[in-house]
Image 1 (spheres, rainbow, N blue to C red):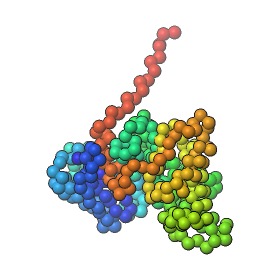
Image 2 (cartoon, rainbow, N blue to C red; image 1 turned 90 degrees about the vertical axis):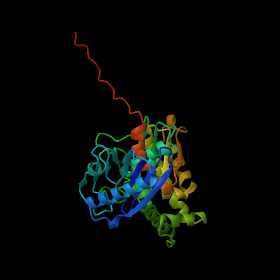
Image 3 (tube, one colour; image 1 turned 120 degrees about the vertical axis):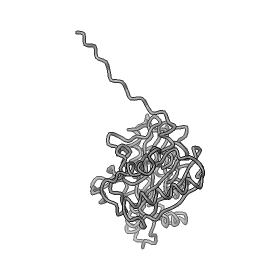
Image 4 (cartoon, rainbow, N blue to C red; image 1 turned 180 degrees about the vertical axis):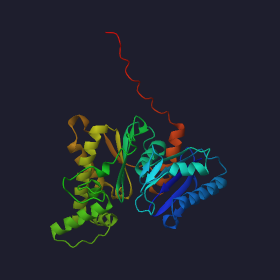
Length: 323
């Protein structure tokens, strides 16, 4: 069994997962009940020991998905919406509790991408991107069958690339980030802007409300998803021409809008691609249930590390010393 831990601002999910993606048992811890770093590790270790006893299976690895998770450093850096601040050596702390078990951590979007690779739509794919659309926008890149971390473990921040020059203020401190236009709060801002332009009083308070209105043929709601899809598609096109994936997999609550979001996204995507890239990249929704995704993604990190064949580094060129 592989243990998957998803650390979030509201709750922490823990589960034991088989290599074929079956969640044998799971438990949830309310984040607000965790007093600090040491307490969090103690509580989660107790949960893991309890689940391990319940399953009756040996523990082969622990994977952790967390905001600010750094795979290379084994740390979590000032996770959003949590009282914990600074650099937390999560892997080292878990290793004290489980000295004979491999432990890995990464950010939640990379965990989602690894989950798709091991358990979802990416099983047979070598090059694809997972975009998580919810409160924020996360992205994980699979290249040649391996997750892309970059030199510092922080590669793949598509949500904080500039979609609109000088645009909306982002919580990261910059202006015009893609996240501020296609994540939940950004969609709501767009909806209110559209209502103002059309002289309509807004009646939706969430992205889900906007979708419900769109289904009823509400003009401002449909226009909101059109603008959202146009912005998302253009940014995905720029990204695709750099990484050349075969598939772009969209995950998260925002994708429940279905074709109201997907259709304009695909149209904008194709419009902004170079001709040589057109009609060759598939945009689709995730094959993993949203209810299971957090635990599966985290567990997949440990499962993938245990079963995948790592890429061999390129050998340096041998220069002939003779003149």
